Length: 347
Image 1 (spheres, one colour):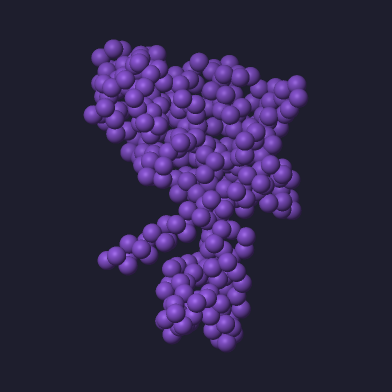
Image 2 (cartoon, rainbow, N blue to C red):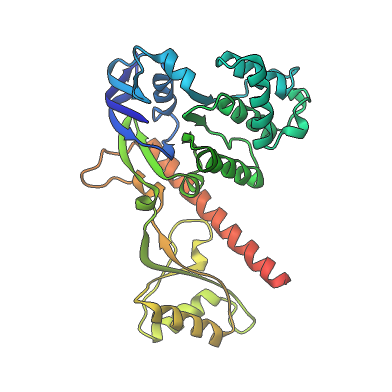
């Protein structure tokens, strides 16, 4: 779907892309990087809107340097910024974009109705977009990217400004774009957990260079580390310490969860097979503690932003961004676990 070879883009004071070589196949692909990593520059080049300084790139087999117009006819683009005219209805806007893509009037209107229904805006399609919520505006931008039935869409931060429910709904729409319609997706997001849940493949860039390109499964392989979180009780006001002491008597060494928010309440230990789960479960029950979660830890995309042998050095900006993203991801996971526990208790 997308291929670049030694692609570079230099400006007078900065190199936005530095000999970037990659291949992206069909499916949903996440493009990851801190602000200034080169994501926006790359998308502009792939759309044929900005020339590369050196190297080559092709989209759908078409050279971006000479066939940009053909590429834009065959792909869709959802920009990050708010670019919707406030006094125009969603129907008028999406029909206009469909006509700009070459659809005849009748087909443009039919496709617009179908696409707005798909993104959940059919009932609101005649309202002026100035009165739309952020989530509704994001759906309109997605609709105009899909209305001409492209083979590939570029989605730039599609969940920006959305609440957790809105983000989940948008991610579901993005998955269905590929599974239901066979349209491939290149999506950028600063929320790494979203990409782990949504994408088949992830491309990580930093300072204009490729850090890693791999399947999401490879990025998120399970480890042998077991994470356990418990609640306190009257007899054990510090349930975490009580469980650690009990595990130590069974010859199981533990450590706390590190520097992430709430990690001091999480115990980490090495799982030596199913018997480790049985030991933890029995000790939690004997101590009368509440078990919030017990799960094998997985690797995360954020771990790529650590200097490793054989890998391009990571910029300080990217490392700081990834640490923040990882903390947010861990916090969201803890909130979800707490919500599940609360829901279970209510039942």
